[in-house]
Length: 163
Image 1 (cartoon, rainbow, N blue to C red):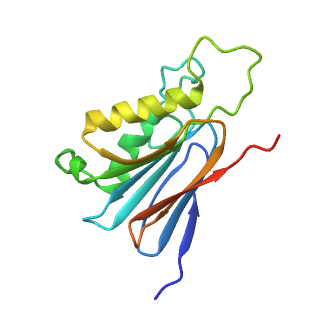
Image 2: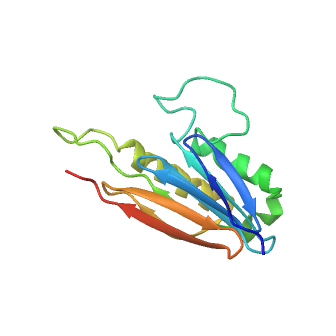
């Protein structure tokens, strides 16, 4: 049996894995989108910084394969995983992150970046017919999302904020 290969997915990156690969992302306000494709024994993980290219904080640049934006990450994962439109319903999704990592003196007038990331991810997954099987999002703590590709299992570890 081969030794597990750890693939750490950094901010604005995505990766796919199979066999003994373990995909992992450490998240704050970013949202981690994990896709499990049990029928093909592969998984994908995107570490998304912003909800979409139209967001006020987003820079205008050509979108290729990547995960800077949630709206960019899902098509990118589908492409890398070889998912055709008719197969999207075979995928299962896991969402983690989207925390509010900033203490505000007064409540902001808009949803936090983390909340916006999660909302866009949930909306797109629903629109694409991908069932979300687990959500561990929001709050004020960081998380680490890990996906064991061999077992097609995931785990979310919570990091409490130190005061």
